Image (tube, rainbow, N blue to C red; front, side):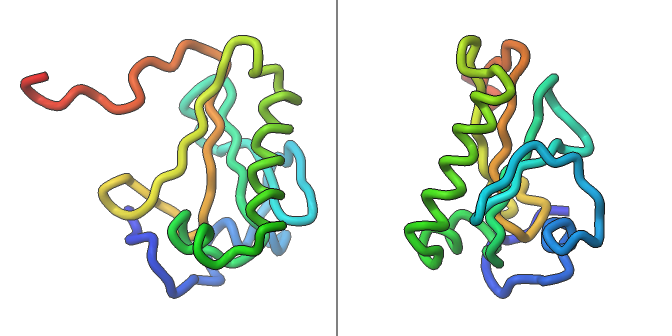
Length: 129
C-alpha cells in the first residue's frame, strides 16, 4: 500500500519497529545515524535497505529536517555497504521512493541498494516511447 511520504511520522511503522528491536532484520552494517539490512523480498541478488535512525517519513522530510551529521551518516553508510558487498566494480543502483506515485510503501525514509546483476532501465518506457 503506497503512502504519501509526508509527515506526521508513524512510530509503529515496520522500520521503526526494526530500529527498536521489535522485529528482527538481517543487518549488514550500521553507524550512529543509519542502519543497513537485507530486504525481506529482494528484487535483485543484492537488495539492501539503508534507513536513518531518526523519525523521518521520506526524503522530503529527511532532507529538510535531518542534521548534517544524519545526512552524512546515511549516505556514507550507503557507500560503505556497496563497497562491503563488492558492488563497486560491477555497479549498483541506489533508489529512494517518495510518495504514492513513486510507490513508497513504508512511511520511514529508506534507500534501496540493488546489485549483483545487470539491472536494466530505471523506469519502464512509457506507452508510445
